[in-house]
Length: 183
Image 1 (tube, rainbow, N blue to C red):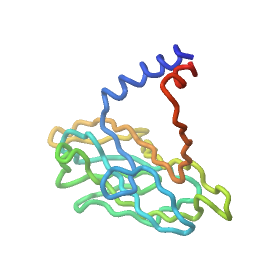
Image 2: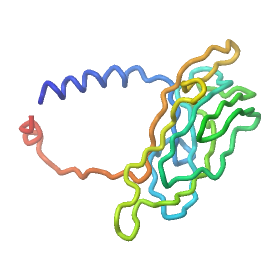
Image 3: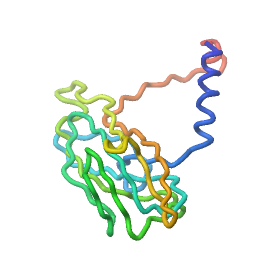
Image 4: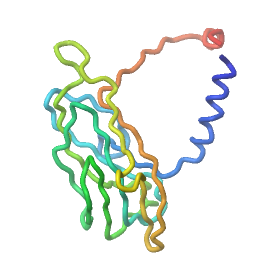
């Protein structure tokens, strides 16, 4: 068991050291919260942010995979955006002026208005549990990608997964010796 844990940690370490550009759906106007607990028939906002772009972003394309029980009512794009397609099926967007990917390090690409048709709890029972809201590849190209101005070179983003109605696993206080004895 110890070997398995060490192998998993060794595989995850390089991924965390080489964090590339990502796109995710957040539920606060600052990219900090990726989980949400909606009430029945609640309208709420999701903010799609691009992180670690490190260039002037002038185009981006992606799609959304939304869980059952969540509906998109509409979305708002940055001023000067030219689009093809739409959400959730696939959005290609050209931006002028380009978005600065260095300062502050994240860019708001879209504000999405969601409606929760189902909720986390219904009549005291769990209804939606750990429902993933994912940024996925555009169906026409099969990629989540962006373009940097003025060179217009393409690069790939990694899509992040947000959770609707996450269920947390409780933790129990234990001594370090008790934790080591598990392995």
